[in-house]
Image (cartoon, rainbow, N blue to C red):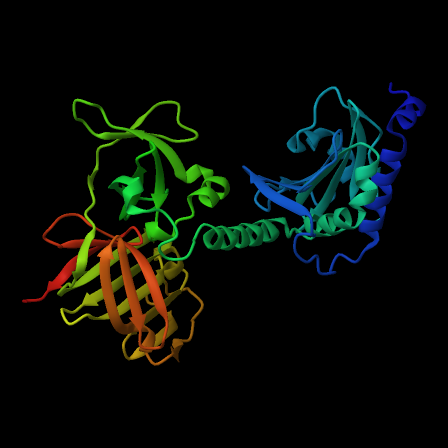
Length: 443
């Protein structure tokens, strides 16, 4: 049996500070708004787990809060004592067998906590119930006496987040904000990024993509900027806007090494997580636009998602380029429930489209009781919403090298990364999305 007195003397002020923070957080109303990530904290996903931690720590200190994602719950009996279960499920939070632990404690609300020691680190495990038969687990880990005091407010906010099962939302928001920041940081002013003379080749690789459970596949392109210094970048923006230094720092996984055998053969790449070189065999060396080039034709990209059982969606977008330098874009999308939902008595769907005349979106619900006579009737109906006047979808364009510049009638200007498969101009990639001629025009 563990010597409780020795345990308390070993944990000292660190343990007391952790328990004080935990008690304060538990007394706060569960319905209180947890808010977003505290200032100075970071969050990351590790499989089905979520880790919160301060961005900067002093030497010899460690502080993090582990939380189970919404899908990583523990099934329990509604009458089960969480305090009795906690010692058995601590391993889901990374508990080690040699941890020295005090007996678990139950709160009046039915939650459970357990304090343990691992080396010179204090670990506080928290288990709470949600939705009756579901329980969730979290863990505070701290090393050193100063961190808990400095980050007291942040720890309390994180505990409210995890106890209200908002960890997934905070992680998603953080990732979205990080993507926006990165997208802005890697783009420099036009002409101030990568120069054409730094590019050895642009290789466009293709594949048919299909997610698990889908019955449809999509053509997807990956455009590789192969630089003369032997590195390559998975690109979707005009190269002359790419801030190489910022990109290498903020998105290292998009960078690779490349090589091409002296005696011919395909390009090969080696990514950060690759053990062996990968051959780029499916694809082509892209061609840039000619200075002042004009196109005559309608180019379309179409994709489908999902399956007939659970539902699916389709999407298409179109660029129509005219020889006089004008353009028009349009899009169409639709989604609908699948056979499983229809068998229960209703079919839900939505459509959206936009062109030079404006945009509209329609959602509808229809009764499919004829497919299932015992289904609860659902009243058919829907609504349509119209927006804008279409001025953003028409304007003038210019092609030069790897860049498509557009000036829209609403005053907006855009620059896009553009490549061609060959000199016939039957296909064009815009921001690494493939478009094929659907209605070629006569010169």
